[in-house]
Structure formats: structure tokens, C-alpha cells
Length: 141
Image (cartoon, rainbow, N blue to C red; front, side, top):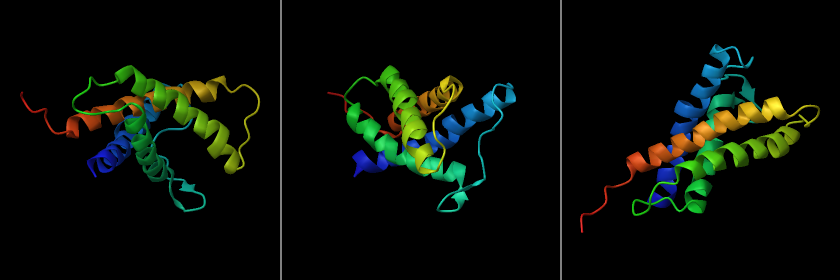
């Protein structure tokens, strides 16, 4: 149960505290127009976008924990978590989620990819921070 529940909670919290906060900081710096914690309704559920993002992030965290073999016995894969979040989540949004919502990739995708990579890499790092913080301490041998 811990192998699923811990990443779910960690991914949800990382979306709120790391991903959305990174977007808010980029907005405050004047680098992007949209800010974090968007309350616009997410189609088709009608829930705020930041809540839908946090729910999907929870699911992605389970996959990340499984792929990176996150456990108390192993060294934390910090770089791999940032790369997983930055590349996989950004590609999934730009090439799967957006087209499903009717937003097709076109033109210069670099600005969208750069912002997505920064926010999602922060999410990956944050998810690992929460996973490691909530894991039981190692037994002294």
C-alpha cells in the first residue's frame, strides 16, 4: 500500500507546492503571462485546473516512483526525478493532453517546452522530496 499511497500523496503535494509555485514565480518575474493556481474550470470535469493538475500529478508520481525505484534503501535519484518530470510530463501535456483538449502543437514550441520543463522538473524534484520525507527511517543494522 505504501508503494502506491506514498507517491500519490507526494505527487499531489508536489504539484501544489513546487509545480504551481514555480509557475507563480515565473509569472512574478515577468517571464510568463499565466500565473500558478489557475481556477479556470478544467474540461470536462469542471474542477479548477490546479486541482486537476494535482490529481494527475499524483498518478504520474506513482509511475515515477516505480521507474526510478524510489525506496529508503537506495540513494535518492534527484537528477532522474527532475529529468522525468521535465521531459515526460511536458511531452505528455504538449503532445497528448493539449491535442485531446483541442490545442494543437504549432509554431515555435520552445517557449512552451521551456516553461513546462522548468515547472515539471520542479515537480519531479518536489515529489521526490516528499517521498523521501514521508518514508520510514532506515533500520540501523
